[in-house]
Image (tube, rainbow, N blue to C red; front, side, top):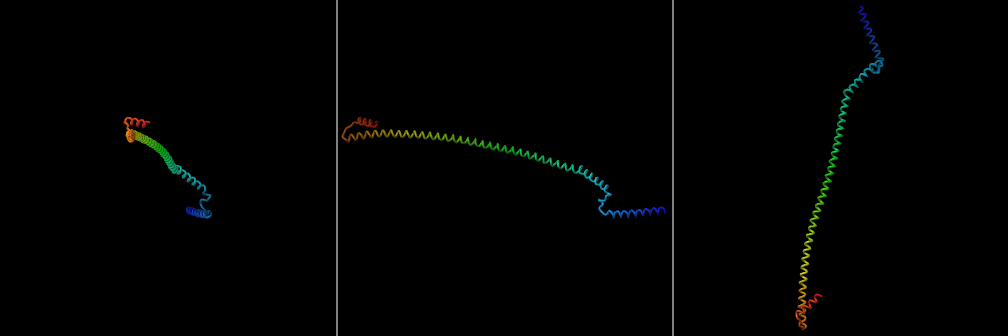
Length: 190
């Protein structure tokens, strides 16, 4: 019987405890997070959760992010170095182009100068040849003119002597050829 009384006592205690729990629940009536009696437990689990998040971030997530950022920085630095190298090569190519252009202009001017000099030389030779031909023709023409003049003078001399002889004979005089020649020669000379 004693055990029966103990069982009943337990049952009564359980019932009382259940009634007290129900009354307690009815009294609290709000959110369990705002129950001040459970704050120490909530603060403990909050700290555990924050430590776990910190550990996950510091050991797993942040190293991966750091590796991605370092890789990105390395890529950017490599791209900048490559861009500077391309810029230097472009400047060298531009300088080589400018030098080649200047050399080509100088060579073109040299060729033009040589061509001008050659043309001037050919022109001078042609002018000298033309001057020589003109001088030769002029000398030939002067020789012909002198020959014609000499021939004309001789013909004038002969015509004058013949005409003088005819005039003297027509006037009824008799003149010898020697005196007519002497008179015509004197007259023609001065």
